Length: 500
Image (cartoon, rainbow, N blue to C red; front, top):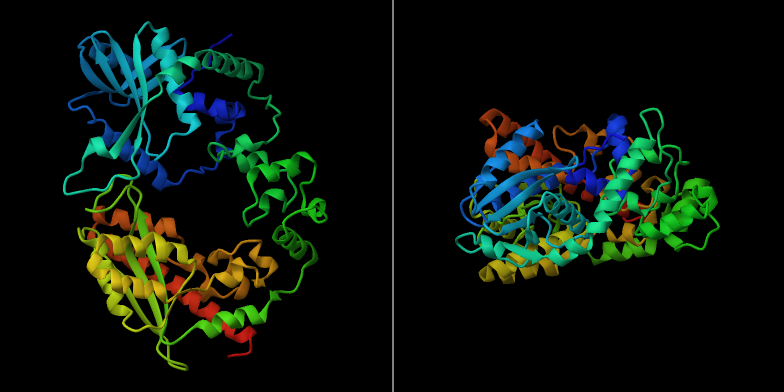
């Protein structure tokens, strides 16, 4: 039979589910990318940066022709000892590019670079596959490792690459997996030989569809399931529990309405099937309203993350705040005021300048109203207080005044069928104010959600002035809608409790 051309990424795909290979080959148009641009960009950036981990190196540039990469690698392998990045090898139609290869006189060492802060099982499969290819070519693989981000590293004045990365020796695991790799390759070849372009393989969905990665073909493979179904249940139901119900044949909401499930899951099902009127527990909502004190500060942050920290005192993947919107109601009956802050893209003191501006705009001990306080309170503010002790008292004052307006939705004190089990503001807002164009994120220009805002800000440095101005304006309008949405939620709370 014709041997399948496998790369290390396609090998890892077949470890997750062999049908991915067939769909990639014969139905690529039904794929819906699940990995965000930010994740892909982080991986690329870390990979490029890590090439210098051992000093000088020779790089094998990507070429559409595998033979060109193989030939270049062959030339460089003869110059041992040296370090080769993206070294390319092929054995029996199994191709791989090694992120970093230490090419010594007595053998080679594999260094697989990941932008993650922990080692996942699929990374072990990745390295074991590379070990298989290289060892079967007759190379003495002395060591096989995974290079990944040290989440506890704190950037000082200079970036220390040796502190930024952890290097885990997994040689023993790679050796132990060699029979498994051979079996998987044989299975992948047999599978593709068995199923031609007109013979789509029948394979049921399973937990492997979502682990270790959300499969890009999930929507295609679940296209015939009733809508809504068990996989649409929100609120924390485990993936494995959803699949347990699926395998029992309890798939549609009608199948599930009398099952022994968490009450909030049953509530979502009940509201959907029976078109229930909104559930409004007025006393709980009134309790939140009564806890507020003027001035009311409705605030929302935008932030980005860097796998490789760029600012002194920060860690990998720390949330770096760059923007806030602030709506203010100074006292009962006062007109709404708005303030905003958006950092310059090249601001080297971005966190402190953000913090000082925010502190200046929140001078009084009124209620600081946020939506999901974990982000503003813990992931941003507490980090600011640790980085800048002179600002800690003011930051702690602000944190002490935080009120989370999301709570009535997360606790289901306020619930409608349109929320579909979610308490995301993107679900809550249209449920409370249906068909209101002023509150429709879809009507915004350029930026409609948080990850788009982060990517847009990070792209500002490379934009022409006209484009930069347009993007900054879009960032301001997006963040402004987030806080205006909170004001409208507060108004709705007052309306339903009779305080308006």
